[in-house]
Each structure stands twice: as structure tokens, then as C-alpha cells.
Image 1 (cartoon, rainbow, N blue to C red):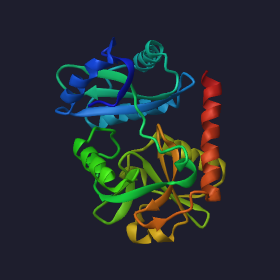
Image 2: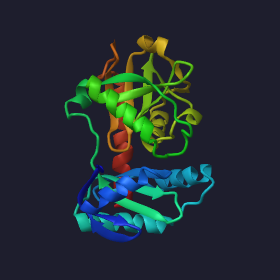
Image 3: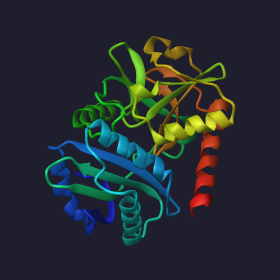
Image 4: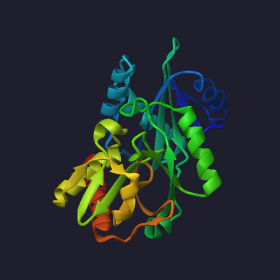
Length: 274
């Protein structure tokens, strides 16, 4: 079962009915896949050059070259938006690394918190797992299945990953930030997928003169922190209310200022690129 929405998707430049995505989704499970998710807002692909740069880096890590140009990606995205009459939401790009070129793009159903959870915070759980190539955005079916199963069993929104040293790295679909005594903490870039929303949050922190410490946090120290939040393309900034049974303040003043700073970056980008 795929996560596509809308009436059509695009495969290797050709529009197809969304019903035809199912057999492709089944096929790509048996091949290495590099993918990206870009958020479109008011018809503008947010921070698109950052996503393309990360795509190029993911291919480089795998010893490959991005098989399409920036123009191809943007024109395909514009075509997808037009044929589905859908100007806001996440768009997924999938590249199958096989002998037969595969480049598909479709509107993706977002995995978002409930509207009120942006105020009250979400529940999260801990999960022992490691990404083997964290800087490459590659499909990891085992991690996906294990995290989905745990989340369904627990009723939590997200699973926060714990490495072999019992340190927080990232989450199954998000990057993780913690706040303590006016300071912001997040994992070093070499340990996590370098999220674009994460990158923009770091920019917002810099503009706000908020110190950021790039260090992994021991699970045993979590209770010492005041606030926690997740970042991701579709979900943006999501406050955390609980990690397991450890409570955090979803209305922490610094968290709220970072969220507003990030939203200002988004508004400015839309104005400049409309």
C-alpha cells in the first residue's frame, strides 16, 4: 500500500493514474532506493535547492550521480501540482537504483499530529535502532516496519532512536531538539540525516542568538531537559509532551520563539519565490 494521494503521479516524466502506483511501490521494496520529501506551500517548493543538494549528496555517498537535473525536478514538480490541482502539501521523489532507471514523484499523504497537539505536544517512545548511512536519505524497510509496529502498539506519534551507546540520535521520521537552561541541543550532523527543516531551525536559532550545542544526549539525562521538539518536512516543528514517561513543556518560551523564527523563514521564502 503506497502513501500517495491525488489522482495522478509521474513516472520517468509520464503522468499515470494513482492506481498504478501500487505495483511500483511493491517493486521498489526489493531495490535500493534514494528518496526525498519536499513541502510545497502556495505552489512554492520550500527550500528546493537544499533538498536537491541533499539528493546529490545521497547519490554521492552511494557512489552514484543524480540522474536528473534541477530543471527536471522542478518542472516535474510543477507539472505534478498542475495535473492534481494541489498547491500545498508534501511531494515525494523516489529514485530506484537499478539497471532500469526509475524516477517517480507523487503527492504524499502527510503523517501529521492532531491540530491540538501542536499546542499540547505529542507522545513519543524510545526505540533502539541505528541508521547505517545516516547522511544518505535511503529507504530502510526494516526500520520503517519496526517503528510503525511500535507506534501502533504504543499509540505514540514518533519513535526516538537510541544508539549502541544509549544516546539519542534522531527519530524514525524526524530530527530531535532538546532545550535546557536557555540552550538548544541536537545531535552532531554526522550521526543523523541532515534534515532541511533541522537546518532551517539552526538558522532561526542563529538569528535569535540562541546557542546550539551539537552533541548526542544520553537517555539517562533526558529528565534534566526542559523542552523537546521534533522537526520534519511535512510536520515542521512539533513540540513533545512525553518521551516515554518523561514530561516536557510544550509551551516553553524558547521553543515557541524558535517555531515563530522558523515560520518567518518560510514566509520570507514564499514571498521571494512566488
